[in-house]
Length: 384
Ligand SMILES: *Cc1c(COP(=O)(O)O)cnc(C)c1O
Image (cartoon, rainbow, N blue to C red; front, side):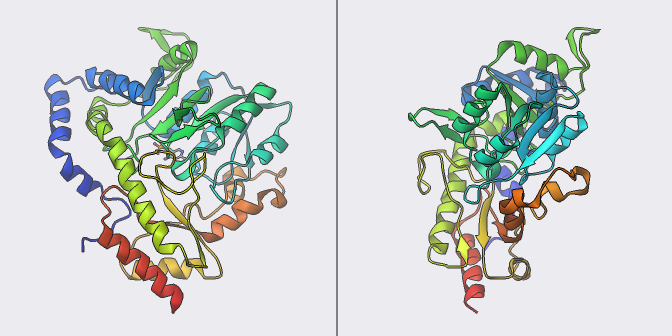
């Protein structure tokens, strides 16, 4: 059996080596390292793939979120509602821009931002909602867009973990994650579903004026060379990373399919194990089918009950099975984001999830033998 890894970037590269190498070589030959034709080519191809009018590439996913908030003109003191159970980047940029983060609880079944909690958190100062499409499937966007409309709020989708996922409206219409709100932000960090070989990110929008504003902000606030109309940042996707991404984009659907295959195998193995709750797929998608992209499994995350989760983590590591706890501490308990206005009763789900979650190896190169080894190691441990 191949050594099990949390993410197997080497194995994936071996499969697409010539496409990636050729694409990088083109950049080297032209030496157009910044804003070269590869960046434009990837931008256009991603726009087509997502069915969105504008993709604005940038340096990483954290910048993508920050630039989205700058582009919307959010001002210090504006309140921005986001999920308590996510990677810190989401709340970090809110705080960095001197906006006021308002963390709210998530759902127990899909780990995504809770709609009732959003409603409860709205005040006259609320200006935006940032749903995070956690672990690979969309938050309840239809409900979020309704709330946003009723209260005149912006919606910024943190799509770092769900690129390629579909969101299905109640009427059956499907759209790509990250293209529903005013703006979407994603990351091309190497371990993401579409990862480059360094840092990268992008912003998506269907709003022409906002797209124009964002294109200037990523490039020092310049719309005309050496004319700085707004305060911007230096956040560009470099051409070599764009070359890698453009070579990988045609494989994204196949990659997500491989992740779903692994998730289905995991689900089947754990079906009758009472201490384990397998991840639930939502958005009109029961179970994990072969064809739809409702969940792209950036992470495969179990909840375990009536056992010592940390002892299980240790047992897996002792058996050369890597695993992760995403996330071990709710954001509202992180020193940087403490706020006297929070009440613990409002975070019952996150407070519980941090004790129960465990993410198993999930990547495009996992084979059945490895999955069987992982699932039997867990099941044998629970039966001991
Ligand atoms: C990875 C990630 C980010 C940040 O992306 P970087 O490219 O690492 O800056 C933001 N939000 C979420 C939910 C993420 O998973």
